Image: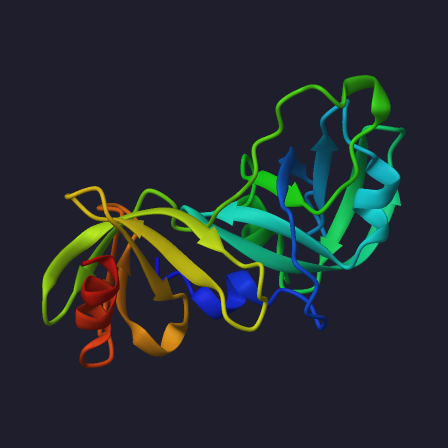
Length: 196
């Protein structure tokens, strides 16, 4: 699968920083219209989850934002959700078993529980078309929404910051966990000079 970086960092119409956490999974389809049943974890505020516009679904190793067209609550911990991009039962069936993520508030009762925060492409090895292997992505700094950065740890232990933009992406191999970039001339030289 070709993960699109811009789709990960621009899931909504505003520039607010998103904090995504695993909240549940898609357990089955409704069998007729292409809607899916989403079950949420006990510590998740399900009202907040289903009141938002998007679910973020882990598909083929990438987190994909999917707009919710309609939601029908099924008790406190689940809902039947129609996704705008899912048009058939077969498309819905392909999502069964996928983990669901969202920007949510956790209930106070379980606020000390660990919740996995999603960092797209963390752990992937960055390869420069011109320079070869650069290092491994440790995190994505999206504190400035318009200019997210990959924080890359080189083999020598030094840290390199690279723009997280589709403009430089040549290929993403989710199986090999590699991200191949065509970086602007001299960008790595500048990083190296700053570390010297």
